[in-house]
Image 1 (cartoon, rainbow, N blue to C red):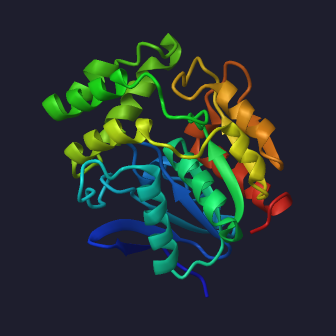
Image 2 (cartoon, rainbow, N blue to C red; image 1 turned 90 degrees about the horizontal axis):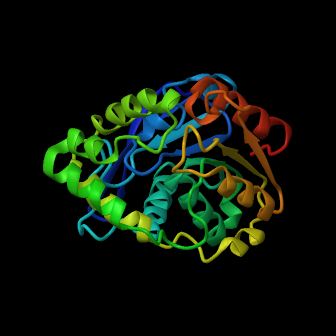
Image 3 (cartoon, one colour; image 1 turned 180 degrees about the vertical axis):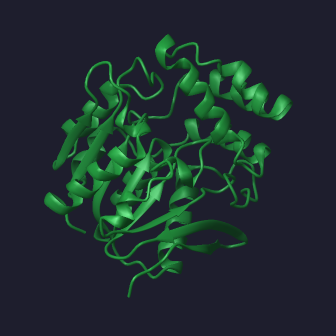
Length: 276
């Protein structure tokens, strides 16, 4: 039976996660990045459901419409994985493909290490975690302080996209503003900004060699997205036994920013190389 777009709620203890599903077919769970929402995986594209997949997207704890963590320190990857399990169990999904951006990619990898039988395939979009927590945490604390002090404008004034190449800077700032304005609880996003970069997703890149699921790593070039270094995506694709790398041509807009093109790449990967 075909599934139309439908909202859902999943419970993990006293915390409620809000999400939506669309389409029919094999399940593909979409996991967004830090300070984003469920919209910022496929960027509003409906191409993946139209290609015959059932997409499941939800806002991580403290993000979008989902509840803040009961403890401002409870944004560790262990907490994010527990939420993912709650979503899967609530929707009675035994096994799925997972497409995650940055924090979402790291969450999917940790889940794959803990519950490999539930993972049909992985799409890892602009990962940033290099096998240990970020060592330079002051910049993340400054972003959290700016967000708490002056809201979205405070975050943007601290960040400024100064590390982004000039041709991409305006788009990066506009994307960040739109992303942040979708949150109900900016104080919870600030808490996540302090905790997630210091959290352990998995212990060292060598851990990736134990993942048997096929994996597509979607990287971006550093000029457009210096936070998510292409070298990290290349390392993931090299370490994952069934990993392959996809990156835009030099000078082109990142595939990770293009919902329709990214959806097509995911569909082709799942249909040709990694059927759920």
